[in-house]
Amino acid sequence: MRVVAQIVKNAKLEINNEVYASVDYGLLLLVSFTLSDDKEVVKKMAEKIALMRIFPDENGKTNLNINQVNGEVLSVSQFTLYGEFNSRRPSFTKVLGGKESSELYDYFNAELGNYVKVSTGVFGADMNITFTNVGPVTYLLDSDEKR
Image 1 (tube, rainbow, N blue to C red):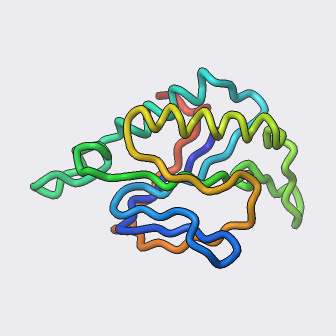
Image 2: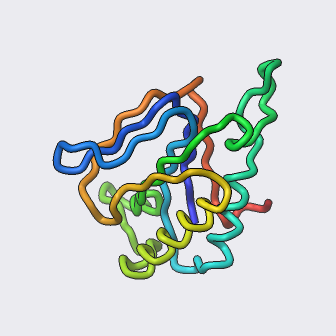
């Protein structure tokens, strides 16, 4: 599982030129799944993201998690995070299939929702996202990396 996590001042997701979801201060997550992912991996990643101390405290130190700053999450499925370039065209052979990815995406958002308010996009939809990145601060999380 891969997640790009960006601290945002605000984020808005549109489908068919209409606002579908938006958040104020918090995290914009781009979420992707690979062939070896399962619910156990997803649950651990949801907890890791919810408890990451990546927000600044009153002294400007990276020390607080998303709940401690009253943040919220906009979670967006993004299968291209597992795209690989072996030539000029991307290959997506390591991406988990649509049905399985959709189920894990829903499970991830439900697990993350146990910690923080989560808004989502629509799995597989053509979505446009606008946001104001804070910092900019962006993290890449991969379930294959040591915790």
